[in-house]
Image 1 (spheres, rainbow, N blue to C red):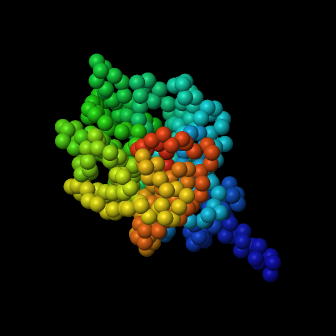
Image 2 (cartoon, one colour):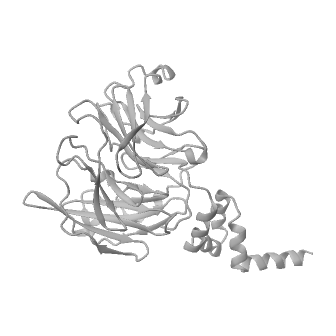
Image 3 (cartoon, rainbow, N blue to C red):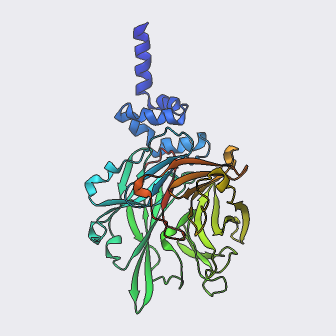
Amino acid sequence: MDMRCTSSQELVLHAEDLLTLILLRLPYKKLMSFKSVSKKWHSLITTPFFTRLLRNIFPPRRASALFIQRTIPVFFVPLDNRNATSPFRTEKFNHDGGQTRMLQSCNGLILCITGLPLIFDSRSCHVYNPSTGHRVTLPKEPLRYGRGGSYIGLTYDPLKSPHYKVIAFVVTSELNIFVGDLHIYSSETRAWKASIKSFIPPQGLISFENGVCWKGCMHWYSSNLPDSCDSDCLYFNVDEERFGTFPRPPIGAKRTSKRIMYFGESEDHLHVIEGYATSLSVYEMKNDYSGWFVRYQIDLDPISEVFPKMPTLFKDYTVFVLSLIRREKFQEDSFLVLEIRSKVIFHNLVDRSFKLIQDLPVTLKRKETGRRTLGEFQVCPYFESVSYA
């Protein structure tokens, strides 16, 4: 009997098609742990073919945690399982030397840069999957020659393709006019290709450092005055390799005390959050780019009752919006994650409840020096993913 059992086990282990069918029926977290069984199992689970099969079986992914970075360490904030440990392994980058900085995340993959801050040629760009521990280092060209500055952004939609793309907007200055060449790296070809040459970005306050991927396009927010000739925001369609514009939210002029606190995407919704006094307005872009509408209006005054030791919480914008997480696809309440005086606060957008998630470590704490706006923390939602980087 034991021999027959052993023989059956060997049959399963050596029949890749049968093993694939069995692995596809495992819970996601159990499947992740089985990658360490053997090199063969790890190779099978991380193949593009297996990943495509998973996309048809598992429900939409949900952000289960946040990676937060202000200086060098990457801090992990679990949103569901409070005992979860960080899958981000800084030792994956240690041999590069210098510092590791997150630039952006997209559907489970994180775009990182390593190197010494003041030594341009030491920098390297990587696409990293914390779930699998897999990392790809991108070729340095064309990034090496962009001494005038560059923007790098990641686009990835596993529901459409197992491959991701990285765009590099390399900027130089000619006669005080900024001119950029745009290049695209594809994980399918593993090479850069030239895209748009000598593009002159709109004059004014386009924040290229805070790009957001939505519907296969990279979006940048404009904080120009609403009545200026360059008030529209900018996007780049990666597949069609073309720029386009979309309207800015109908918010007050920058000369007012209102501030943009957040620009991001969740569950296929693009959001801008505006802060004013003790309230937040959450704007959502329509799917056809025809305009914005108010999705949530949030009164922050009640938080002083929940946390009585912080009576002057929102004076001078001591609140920072870390993330907005939509959960409608999972029939759960959507919520905001806020940072208030080095404390991470969960705010339910349905029942308006607040709760303290955890305190930030000393490395992330900062002096209360005044108003906070977009970009003080780098925040990357964490999605469990078997996608290869």
